[in-house]
Image 1: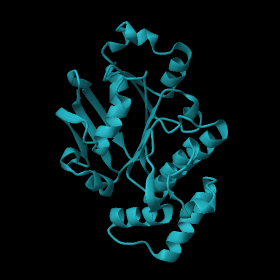
Image 2: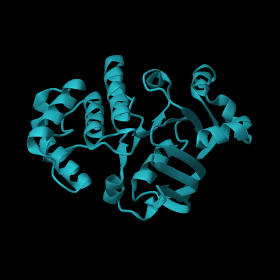
Image 3: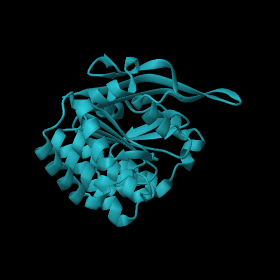
Length: 266
């Protein structure tokens, strides 16, 4: 079992108005085999957390730590984090003109594993994963995400997830822009990856609809750069009914019950 641990994380960015603190003391522990959902309103810091774990240079860690099985993640370069088992499915996947999907996937897999996969087995695995995600076989020869629809880009993110087999997957609003059918296909891919590799999942979302297909073990509510409440799947159902307005008054910033916190860290 592997553990990704975030302790008292403070993160800032530089803006035209000066330095702005985004994360204000986030602590979270994820173990392989667990699925954690982070929910919260726009601008609460959810995507900042995802980008910080992955190593985006815009975000500056001013204090706190991120460790993977005791190793300092913050001391690792972006590629070192990927090789250590951290995967980020981006909210807005970028286009990479001039690089075919075929070349990208095999090159990335080789970099992560330290050796090239056997070509015959790899080709079979790629074709099978694409078929399950309902990605047309012709996409293998197209440039990465170039001209893809939003839903196609999200499916390609999950294709990478299934092929790269990380220890921890961070899914940054993977459900945004997906219709019902695409949401089911993407969710099934995440569930397959989770089951096949005993993967830990950090799922960032605004809405509960993806949680109908990817069942979380723990739900964490993010408001103003902090975790203000934690619970089980039932917390997501309550958020669906009540929304986030009650946290704006500060009511949600009360101390989290010790029993709930203990369960989330178990």
